[in-house]
Length: 275
Image 1 (cartoon, rainbow, N blue to C red):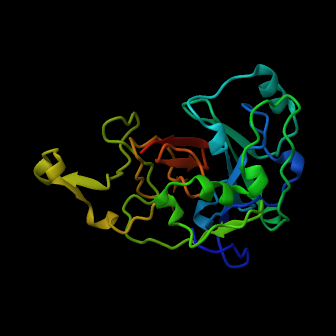
Image 2: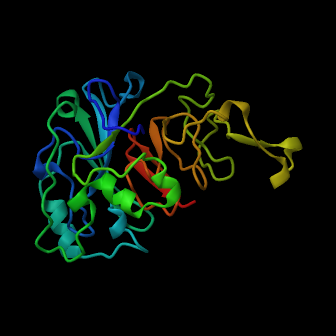
């Protein structure tokens, strides 16, 4: 994430702000609250990661607003049924976390990616939750207002209070990752056949202790927000395809309990864990 607004002609997407190329009616609503889900990021995929066909060039990720994410999702069947019965983008995938909060991803064509920014819809008439802050000041400003000091360091100053305010994404190739193209695996919990995936750490002499813990040399230039390759979750590695993005809370502005998340955009799986 760069500390400047995105330039679509030069960058690989943007964090915060608004999704491109969809109608207001196609913006996914939250089945828990009836409010629109918050846009986290839109990422233009490199050629090797366009696993849904050449026409699908990007993915937009939407999340529960952090001020609606606290302790476990309430369930209102009327709101849920109304949201799920409404219009939807043809390539919408919905995902639910362990607390029953909602997330969504949209697969975008080149035309959609290059399209105008979308306008978020209003909430359902049934909605009773408090209005999320991002709808008034934008995701970037809302996150900056509430962020912990370490997260505020991602910004040189306060973002503009504007729904369209975003930050650019820049992709940098990393040639030394032995796990590129391999399904991530947790050596203790994996239920699938070995893929040759290597953990980013080892213990000297095989003795598991804090003093013996070491990082693999090839993992030392690992970026916190990255596509595929070695996973660095806050807890165990979830089972996913090689086509995933791992990202931190500030990469769109979420409440992951100080942790990070993984979105598998091939299998449309999502997971996060607290720090």
